[in-house]
Amino acid sequence: MIVKDLGLVDYQPICEAMRQFTAERNQHTEDELWLLEHPQVFTLGLNGKDEHVLNTHDIPLVNTDRGGQVTFHGPGQLIAYTLIDIKRQKIGVREMVSKLENTVIRMLSQLGIDAESRVDAPGVYVEGRKISALGLKVRRGACYHGLSLNVDMDLTPFSYINPCGFQGLEVIDLKSLGCIITMDEAKEKFVSEFNQQIRKSK
Image (cartoon, rainbow, N blue to C red; front, side, top):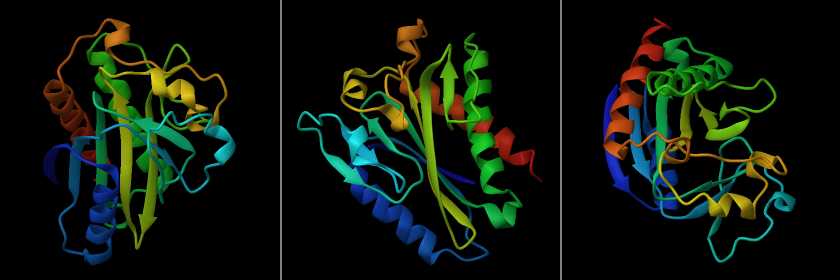
């Protein structure tokens, strides 16, 4: 799997790049993991309802082709986009979601934080507060989009929406939990855990 660190990049060009990569890949194309941050943006998934966007406060709102409802991206949030041929890897969509959730859960466990997933709402939670959101799109047996992990960011814009369609859902980041970690460290730990999760399917 090729890992690319793309830094801080706008949302829409990256979405176009993911779609193009997925459309042009074949059975021999190596899987890729893109790590990055986005400038402030709200994204509304295919199942998203406008009623969950309360007030954008001039932050851009982008409709996108991933699953899920509305979420927020901003600097200090680790984005991991998984461009993986899940058919070749023999991974189902639900299993892929679980692998992403387990990657974050195991990563946080190493940092001394107890986290869990929820059957009714994909993502990772710490004492009921959401720290990681995810949404995937599958096309031609390959997935793209991925997950976000709140590391050290301005959480205020989450109050402008019903995060992932849940009114009153509290959102947290690692810094608020007393865990001080750089973005580079977060990326390194994520890649290590994600590689282990992917290898489990072989």
